[in-house]
Image 1 (cartoon, helix red, strand yellow):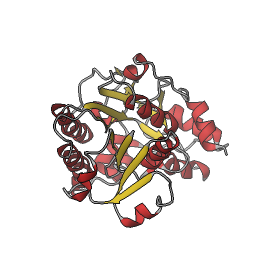
Image 2 (cartoon, helix red, strand yellow):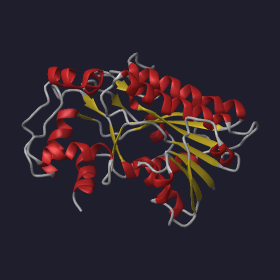
Image 3 (cartoon, one colour):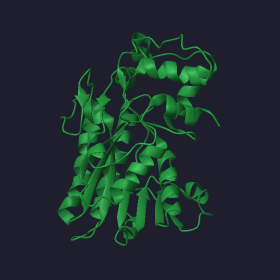
Image 4 (cartoon, helix red, strand yellow):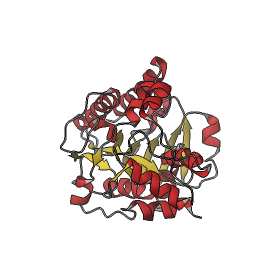
Length: 302
């Protein structure tokens, strides 16, 4: 297949493109700059285009020749949510997806895998949330709703659209785990707030494998929760990570401090979602890392 990936030079995009190349696909990635593309220049079978995907431009010409599109672009939400930061979080997702879909030819038979997030569900409390559950009402839920709506426009052009609602992605070379490891390595790790909130997560290898599965699953369309079936609470995650690092987990981040220091983003970290991957499992996908201890053992130890 010929596959184009927006956000292809990032943490998830780099792993995704390498896995697809290993399977013999021809891959085009969109990077935000020539510098980001230069890091991937030596990979055989890979083409990198430097472009600002929030703007229409020549990069869109590459869309028509593809069999599959994987839309991963979006500014990280792990930042203080100032007015400008929230605009960037929204714009990088909505405008990129809009421009990508606009470039799909009418009558297309290609497949679009477009990212969303478990944040779609808002604060889920104790309720188990599958793909059939409605959206929440906070900022991230609104971003996800608009993001998904832009992607679904591709259905009007004949494309098969899959929405990938990512949980927290755990990988060795970046992402959330790299950020969380440092305080634990210093002996300062612990749960966030009460630690009772549910913590949705997925191993990077399972995320990539699930995307590859859905590329080839002709009957698969609509939303899919990209989260492990082994749901855990935040305090369980903190204890498991501390154990793998042979460090204590004695220092919780108090809720008032999270709200004071990080504002609206801090409040979102205190929420939880017990998200289950029902659609993936019903279609026959099998997770390689369904349980937390097994996943952390793979990720933390060389």
